[in-house]
Length: 340
Image (cartoon, rainbow, N blue to C red; front, side, top):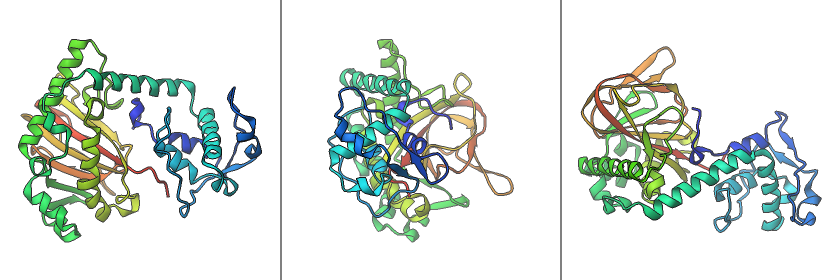
């Protein structure tokens, strides 16, 4: 899926920097003005590894501030040449920043900065409608049957409340109706506030012209717990080959379908390892999900409100046209920073 939101960019700079096809990428980083030559000069002739060093444990970059997320440095460090792996952290940081500055255009960096300023302004000014949504309350958010299965934490317990209409695609009841209603009201409140403030809302991606990024108005921390505690245990069992047990970041948003909204969604893949798609409401008909199988397109009846569908992000899928009403879905793109 083509993406335009800075929050959705991930791994791209790492992949570009390693992409000459022969297993290594020659590097001649340009030293930014004012940076000590000694920090980078000894390593100008070094090459990145195409495949990461799975045995190497990256250093902690959580205290590093700037335009790149700490996870980017952690992921890129595994690709550093052997001679750099044991270097001081500052040396590695300088080296990686030179790479990122060279392969990530200034225009893209400006976009990230604008998004950061946009989010900071919202967090400073927006007053939530439902404060209780912003902290994790499992018994209020999730159905008892779902919570019991997660506590048991076994394939048998998960399959006890799921159906598998298509191989690798799972459908199940997950969320309390009251949680869905509160989330819908919070999104509506946020959109009204944005309109009143004359903000230009940043949409979730280039394919959806309606909807909102939930992380932008304060729900990021709660949704990270949502992923780590209630999605990762399931994906660890069913999607180990895509790192389902090592999910460590997300992109969360709602999308809206209706006659005066987006009507359908074409065939695409998600920028995620694992995707959770939950129908929040409201009254509607149509809009079924469909997945590309080996021989044909397979449909998933996702018209049931509050029903969740879990699938690999790279499983090609789309949404049929909605025929009436308004449908709003919660999407949680679950990702991992480590690349095998």
